[in-house]
Length: 257
Length: 270
Image 1 (tube, rainbow over the protein chains, first blue to last red):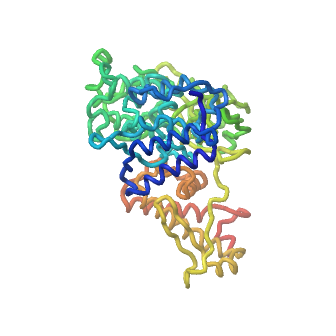
Image 2 (cartoon, rainbow over the protein chains, first blue to last red):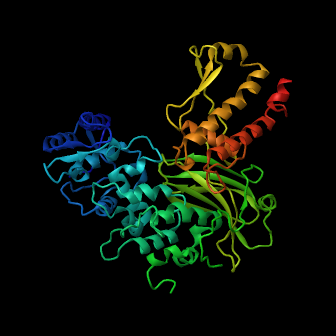
């Protein structure tokens, strides 16, 4: 189908549908929605009165099934226009529309009952930029990590189902100044914490008290190292050389042997 | 480079020096911004930076300005000496808030990559215009004039831990706002209440939302009064006693500072 985005009326209508469901539950619980809700969303996403074509946009496949968030980000980074002004977070019309056409995949389906969990609107409609909220937009962040950081880093954060906000994102992405800013550090993190056979994060990698965990690396060790070293200019092996022994068990055996 | 084999329980263990955010050392200003790019003008004086930071000028080094946004870093290498140059930051969304860090990095073979000196991360004022080392001073003090404070002159309330709201007795304000005693009597005590409230209500200052009221007060304390509360140089204690002691130091620094006509607020009054 043609790549489109919501106009102001479309965003308002999409938000109204979400808010109407969210008002039925307590703020910290998911609203449970079923097929009639999705059909209403489909209707506005396909309504020419509520959408406009995306400048420079081509075709997008609304039927594609995403294996995980990385797949979603990878696909969107291929089919969306390259012009940043069109695809950035502040273009709420685009990101709300993309969320609308893939909404069935962005909501976790209940194991029993067949209904799906609808959370706060900011997961589906970008709001004002807020440092500790913008990264929770499921579709945008999948796209942005793939586009801005490349395959390796994107896999680190996005090896999760399309509907899942990742703990890695919440715990580690927010440490962007110290952690993501160093390519060498990110390469070491991918090597240490991603299981190469499954492509998913190793057990306890996000443990708060686990020695050598990714969480400790991002929230404690990287903060300290970047006070003393220019991590941005260091490669992976130079970073390994700085890490204390608690990281030894996580490192590939060939490194530092 | 020295290999680090143990965790060192000290933040600055390589004796990195601090580059102060002074316009005579460097100025960063936003010239223009498009949906995709930011044009920056950077002016610097490396000799002054070395002198102020007490870094040995014979060490081989690089002076770099890192620009951080949405997890990205773009590095501007500033040539030896001093100059003023314009740089274009590409692929920068128009709602991204830029953070900067100026660094002197060792380029000696034995110590390559070690930071010799650096600023704490800093931001520019929003909008166009000169931003001297990000001195964010404009208009963060927005008291609400109140008719319901009774006999009280002012009060601070906290709808959220990062949202102090200052109420001022309207009658008192209208009668006193242009008198020297107004600032001398009120400002230090309001500062004490607000900063004390922020430090005791927020264990981790790093997660305070940008551009919130608390963020603006912290910027003021960090950049004008020069108490690093967040970032690299912050050595903020966790205990309440220690934080209250710090609040006293901040209020003293505020009271001791020459604000107008080369006078402290008290000198202006008496």
